[in-house]
Amino acid sequence: MTHETKKKATGYDKYVNWKLLIIPVILFFLILVLPTPNGMVEVGIQYKVGPEAVHSFLAEELFHKQVSDLEQWQVATVEMMEHNMRMGAMTKDRLLNRNLKWANKYDIKVGSTNFKRAKDFVKQDVEADRFETLMKKSFELRMDGLHYDALSDSQKKKADVGAWQIKVAIAMAVFVVFCFMTECMPLPGVAFMIGLILVFCKVVPKDTVTQLYWSDAAWFIMGSLMFAAAFVKTGVDKRMCMAMFKRLATPNVKLITFIFFIIIAPLAAFISDHALAAMFLPIGMLLYQNSLTDEIPDDKELAKLLMITIAMACNIGGPGAPSGGARNVIMIAYLNDMFGMDIGYFQWVTYCFPFILVMIPITWFVVNMRFRPKIKTLAPAMKHLESEINKMGKWNKHQIWAVIIFVIMVFGWFTEKAFYQLGIYPVRLGIGTIAVAGAIAYLLAGVVNWRDYQEKVDWGVVWLYAGAIIFGSVLDKTGAAFWLARSAIDGLAPLGMNSGLPLMLTSNGLTAILTNLMADGPAAAAVGPITLNMAALVHPGTTFLPFMAMGTAIASSFAYCLIIGTPPNAIVYASGYLEPKDYLRAGLPMWILANIALIALTAIYWSMRGFNGLPSF
Image 1 (tube, one colour):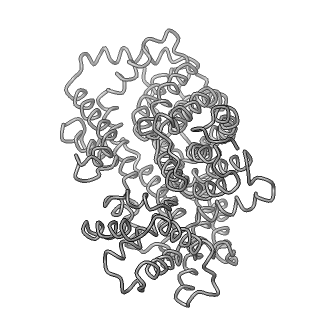
Image 2: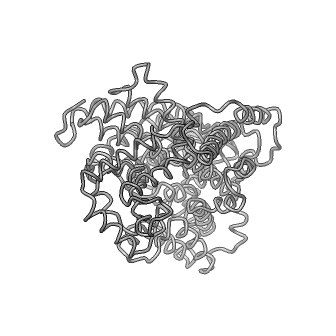
Image 3: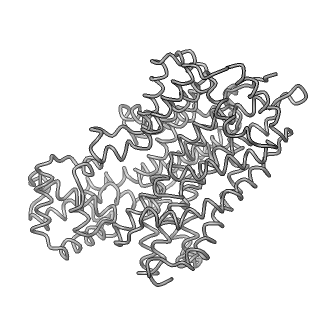
């Protein structure tokens, strides 16, 4: 007998709890009316006035003109140098290695002719030593050379706007995190509150904020939930489940969760964690729904255990290889741009994959300790699935089409970036576009109709994650994340946490906090330049630099505690079995143990092995 359970997310039927909601509302307005800290003003100057000041400095030094008098290729030269400086790429060779796609990616408006002319000028007319001197002076000007009292009136207005936007972002962070942790209002409503706050507080224009809700990541969440619905309707999820577990002599719950970890976590180092979560979500739901009996018609702890297992297995796998997430590539690029140190793909795997091997048993133990289901064996579920598959008979055309389309989608997720870089694809598709294309392909093939998507996709989760992406983006682009990172490190310096392993522990912990509030890439990007520069000051030319880069990348995967931390967290929330506090139940001890495991890995394995012949710190 199959027991159907509610699939809508916990809390969607609740109304606003004003006794709780009034707390974050008061905190939000209190932060806005408090005096602006000097640190916020300084970061506001760096983000709003700094680029303009650097442009003016470079225009004068290189062309003896004001920016308004420059030709288009000269403007491109100045903008390219300024953006390289912001990325920590201070050498002439790094700029000469850039291509037009790079310029377009970072919104530098330049055509191919002017781009070539700009590079030729740098190559022929700017000596390497002079280039580096100009970049260092530009960096010092942006970070320390601009003081509020010395700014013009127009510059002061920009700095004030920058400081205000940082304050709004911090106030919004307090509001959003409180709401997500307490569920004092429906979570998709919180996602829309993010947009409203940004418009009402003049951080983002009304026309822009609506566009922000439809990013590639939001499309991926939507498309992945749609293809999961197609798998469930056709019964492909049942066939996949049986293929994975039918050979188990004793399919008990602990063994099956361990199998999830040993399959998903290593794959997440090489395959998108988004895709893995979407693939295994229907399998986890199926195992739960078919495990219920007349004696135990409901076991919420089992449902939560299976869902959390899928999410956490995806989360711990990302650091294993550079392909496991943007954070890894960002830190590799920072290390190369700022200090000329290279970490190869295979080299990264040999240093960082052991972290996954350590975390698999730790995470498996934590989730099984935190969630105690009444049902101990899934043998009845496997027998029921076997009988269901026998009733299906041979593979039918809808199941075959479901698998073919899915395989094409996975191939697209693997190759879309590489094929674009090779020129095979004329445009960058993005994993979200491919996911939605797959969902439409299911419609065209007759595998599903729109009613299936309407009823089986949790559209609230789509909006929830769309809002979370905007939230993280605002923390990044306003400088709020940078301000938080710098303030924390400055505050811990007097405690002796500004060198050696204590500095690395501080950096890792700070990154691990930020990554629960924003995407892993921006979290690493915000903390990386600060900690790498500090590492270069206290331990120059040592193994500390590459260890700091890898540590920051790994720590930015510790988004275990909030629904909005990672796409896998949001995807499994769509099952309807989880509450926000369930992420904290497993995520908080995991967060602590992961930080301990990372610092132990650094102190023991990395330190014993060394790095490319560099002296130890």
